[in-house]
Image (cartoon, rainbow, N blue to C red; front, side):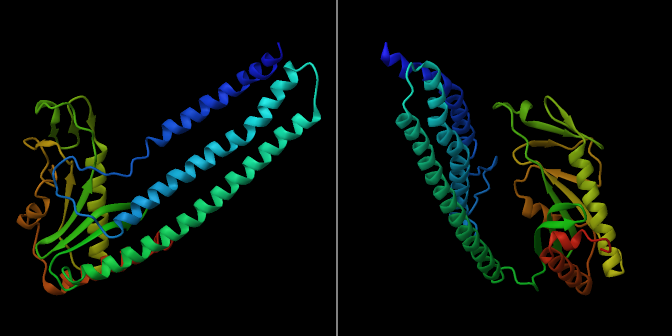
Length: 300
């Protein structure tokens, strides 16, 4: 039967269709929405709409870059199948398969160029939004304010999540996200020991180690830059978890994240005179503005 010559070659397209389904499934993992495990009343940050559009643009780029080659090769693969099952060969038919593949290559190439240009525009717009937002933030947090917060501070070969400067000391705030269990208080409680965190079904040592590492680095760096010892304390945040600190060490404070700002104002690792306080802010401001490439050069 003649129709079988056109139906049987579809078998060769099944693996490509399965790979396409995997690509579409992987796209569903790309979720731009961020949900806090506790009710922090998150406000929209500078450039939030552009961040969402940028995530969508990267998702589209992923689809076009992954499905483009599959769709472009499909006519050629089908044509090779036809060569196996067809009793007679028609050069016009093979030319149509090649022409269709060429058209698909051109279409997806244009789509990739469009996605590239769109991402460049969005990244430029986001950079401008963040710069303006930073300037506007000085209205409520001027550089002379007694409290200052720095994010993603470069520290040698790693970064510190947050550094908070207060009149009562400097705080290193590290955040670790861990999925909560079912709606049971016992399964959402973590026990803090001197060297480890005991979760309901596993235990970890690295979060406490990394927090102490960040505190040690910042303490040594500030003392070297300021010429005097600067009180630095580490805070590890596990959002959403109930924290049991009865066996915890005294050098690291582990909290769930709720009322973190109020908790930092109550802690007092030491006193900072105004000159040292202002110098610490100036040093952290300069370091946060430097590039990662420059910071990795041996000398800092």
